[in-house]
Length: 285
Image (cartoon, rainbow, N blue to C red):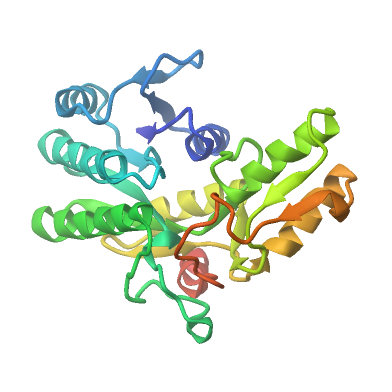
């Protein structure tokens, strides 16, 4: 048995690959776009259908965790990396390994507009994304359902909320703040600049998320989507305070700008996951 993790050099992929190698007896192979120093890592451009087809044919993976993707909010980029790359993988699976288990990485951004009283949001909530990234992930989900229903592929979807952990991208709130904190501690900056801190988000540690991804891949029902989150919301303000406390810094160094360029024009005020479905999955034998 072999397990293939795409996006193995990324934040989620690298943590997940390490988790699987520590908790599985299967051969765990990482897929990257460029050369990697790690053993059992294969180079493949997921946007090249011929490369993907040849890679799946050669490796014959029993399980695929598709974590590769982008959140650029540029239509052409996210369409290619989140939707068309997934199609390339699914097409190759149909041809060469139709019995493989496939976990696609969804996002809470698929839900989009959520009223406060609609929380905690469940997997069957209508998808109304308010960003290009969210739209591309919703399109990926629809693609998964199409391939499940039309071709009988063994697909499950992990709809992830917000992740926190070592190496998180500086395109995300936590990563940006941690980068600025390092600058202050190293004497390269005196202030930390942030956008609106009133929003509430559901954060889960990357190690906990990896355990849930493994659970979904192992026990999840084909064609189903499972929220991956903590089930609670934390305000950006409270999260920032925790990061500052960990670094031994005072809130006085923070400059809040509600109209920061890093703040989306369409901001969902509060969103957090219903985790009932995945908790029931964890209880199954």
